[in-house]
Length: 321
Image 1 (cartoon, rainbow, N blue to C red):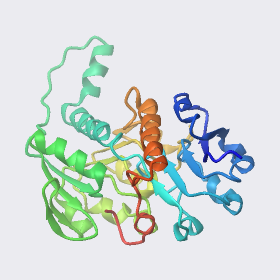
Image 2: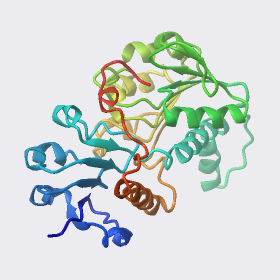
Image 3: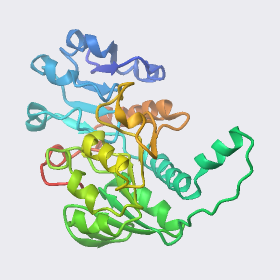
Image 4: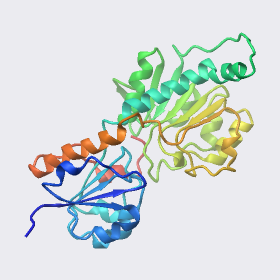
């Protein structure tokens, strides 16, 4: 009888190709998300490489041997459901891979706004040499909503270039990375030149950036979202941009996602859209697989797994970090 654990890897269009090294110690099942139901029975370990798929919930009754789920992302909102949360199944995520690149993305968007690179590019395209002044970023105020690992990485980088950083979270405190953390979202955004969303998606944070919050922001402020698209009331954002109540938005995540071709966000003024790739630097897929292999070795040796998620906190209704 084969005593090796069964490791099922659920993938999407991109198929991980670096996991053969664990095949000597495990029965390795590579399945697309649409075929997870046929493979979940007897699975001990599930690697959700297709992290945005909600397929696990639909096949949960057949997950008769599952002990550990690793998610190929930092956010686990797409994975969490009541039965998984209440179970003894351990969930781990992919902290340590995406945080610094996301921080670089946020800094890049801030620089693009402040230095108006789009204006220079447009002038270059028509051969026009036209001087204009730009904005400084040193001393500008940034409010980061969601003081988790991503928010902290963003804060450290922005503070290093001289920006004044504050945070919004579940509890008020002084923080070495985020400075003053407040629970008062409206007050925090009112004083900000840039508002950066890095909060997880929960029932409490869904739609937290609504018309009232957008109205509280300065008309010269910019919104940058690297959390989840559902944190923002999209219709209210489009209206604020069209009415000049907000100077711009850089959105790596949107609601709905992917964005339909006729959606008004495509043509809203001063919007910069990217396809949910703020953390995806070259080699990230290989790094995800190597991280899973390292954790699997720990699993086989009976050592504590890295990046264990507090399932109840991750699904809690109590806020942003």
